Image 1: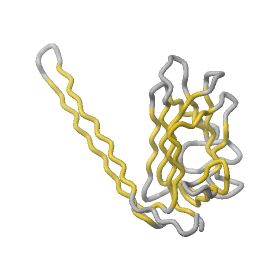
Image 2 (image 1 turned 90 degrees about the vertical axis):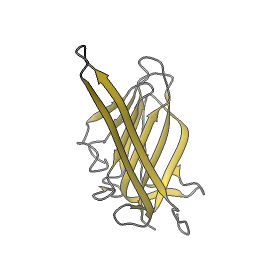
Image 3 (image 1 turned 180 degrees about the horizontal axis):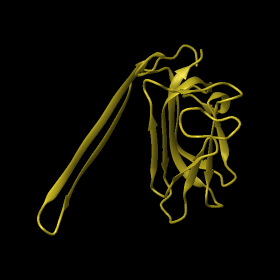
Amino acid sequence: MANETVNGLTLTVRIVGRVVGSDGAAQDVDITYERSFTDGTGTNQVGAWFYDQTRTVAQAGEDVDLNGSASYPDFKGAALDLNSMALFYCENLDTDTGDSVSVTRPAANGVTGMQAASDVTTVGPAGLLLWVSPVDKATVTAGTADLINLAAADASGSAVKLLIAGDNTT
C-alpha cells in the first residue's frame, strides 16, 4: 500500500424519528454522528482501507486477515496491511429470513478492541454492524491479533458490503 494517500473518508449516521403516545405526548429523536478521517496514523486518521461492495461470505466462514492478506486487497491490488483499525462496516445485503452473518473475533488470533474473544455479533438480514473508534483504535498485530471471522447462516452464503479502514504499516 505504499505510495497511496487517503484523500478523505467521512462517516455520517443520522437517526430521526417520533413516537406518540395515546395521550398525545410525543418524543422526538434526532441524532447525528459524523466523523471525518484524513490520511495518516493519528486521531481521526486512516492510511488504508479495504472495500468490497458485494462480497459473498460462505457458511463455513472466512477469516478477514487485516495484516498482509492478499484476499483483502486495496484498490490497487496490494494486500491489506494494517497495524490498527478505526472503522469496521459490515452490511448484510441478503433480505431473506434466516440469512444472517456472524462476525466473530477468533479466540486465538482476533483483532483486539472490537469484542471479547469468541463472542459473536449477528448481523441479521438487511442489517448493519458499524464499529468506529477514531482515537483508541483496535490493535492489529500480525499473527496474533489480526483476524475477524465472517460466516453466513445460510448454506448458500450471504452477500455483504464490507469496509475496513485503519492505519497501514507501510
